[in-house]
Length: 194
Length: 194
Picture (cartoon, rainbow over the protein chains, first blue to last red):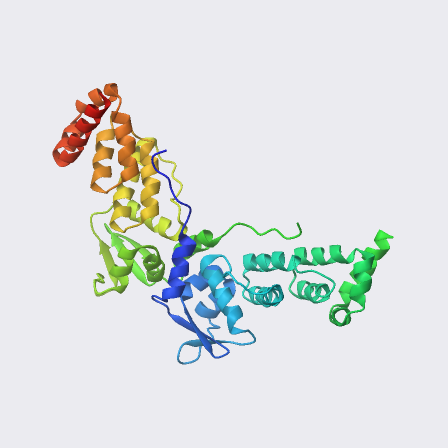
């Protein structure tokens, strides 16, 4: 009535810490772009960062720089933003780019065991499922153990019209070759539905 | 529908960091009790910690221990918990102890410029206002610039019966001596109400 307590501003404060780099004690090199960060924050958020930065697997070079392989700089940057703020940076990108970004982020989130951002990516990707994308998304879901996203893809493919169109795509050929178990699950679904 | 994203777990992760002390790089000594913490987290949350831990005023002794004067260990402990989690530790204390703890925490929050916990303490103290406590709480509100809490006290004192009882207490005598401006404001209120 006389005092109103505003919502938590912890994520804003940590977002500021990432931005100012105050007290940063680790530098990541991702494809030539460098990012300063705080080891304790990373370790608090991800068991993989914790092992990498505090364990015996500490993988920095003599200058204390950690080299991140097989990841685009902008993906690592978004991941770092999430680690500090628990949300993803706002993008003004076209849908298609956002779709691809979400796929890359999901892979990165799986790598660092960041379960919540993995779920955020899955939720986003559910909205991108169509005849052109479902095979790729389903491959990704299978490879990175995304239960909900896989369900959404199967739901889309439970329409015979969708499945027929998708089966003619290159993506589907790739899917059936890289994840044969998925093709079997599809057959099982069709048998059960008929 | 297929994927549900849980609420933010940033505060839980940082709470875990405080508990495990992983990568801690500063130790506070408060009345003989020591607390390990992370300088970057403290600096991100409080401009006072930031100046104390990264500025030229760095006040640690040669062993890197920062001595905190004029504060009880349990108050500092609760403050630290708030810094990491944006909430106060659950207490099973009697009301009276919680009242006193909230007063001490408010003073500490003001000292470290932690605005949100200051508001949380104000909100709690609003619930403790009665004829026995209002003078002390009002003194505190005046000394630490707590606008909302001060308003709540004045609202309580706008009842003549309450004011009459309170004026007979020791606390009121202390208030009128340490904050004469408050007595003037009370008179102004009475004149305006009559």
